[in-house]
Length: 295
Ligand SMILES: [Zn+2]
Picture (cartoon, protein in one colour):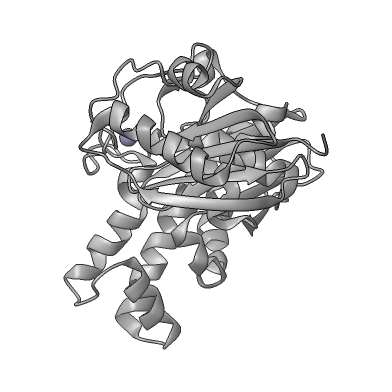
């Protein structure tokens, strides 16, 4: 029989990725498609089956799916995913289970990636860790007391929707002033448009060349991250905060400012937590989904 593998599927608003992954978190083979967002859940399930077929299921023992939330991981039903219209109350786990004839787990993408980083990445060996991914949105997951925090229906750890500014900008969730609305990639990129920077990564490139306006924009972004991170340290008392997502590629530039911002608003006893970059890149969700499927 050899070592059995997990089929991991990472459903994103742009990309649908799948991989065969072993118990040690090694990616053996991967494949991806552009998510058929307009086609809705039935079209995307067909894409998932296509990817499964491409990768081959001969050695696969279990299937782990990572999806944007909110979703109910107890029942395996997607609730109301802001990035994927038409997925309200879709029984994703049951549908895949019937089509693939294998056990299937469904978890929120932030929780999946947090699990991946905890078991196989930047959080290895820790008992208390907060993972925050800052890209198109802000997601995350929390490990407390050596356990992945899941919350009722597996919806815990939606750190992006922590409100940090009254009357702040509108968020994808319908709320205002969420951490995500202020500090995710699109907010960072938007701040640069008025200064001729086309997006967040253009700002970062210019900042690396020492352009003053870009450095100011990076400072503003790092300050918003500092506000959010300070609250997360107080809430969960992690040993380490692991930052992933596209914006974390600029963590080396931002970390001094993040720390400076946090200093006056973080109680002294919480300041020992370190802040580090994630290690698994865009494989974190896949590796975590596989790990959770095996667990
Ligand atoms: Zn929100």
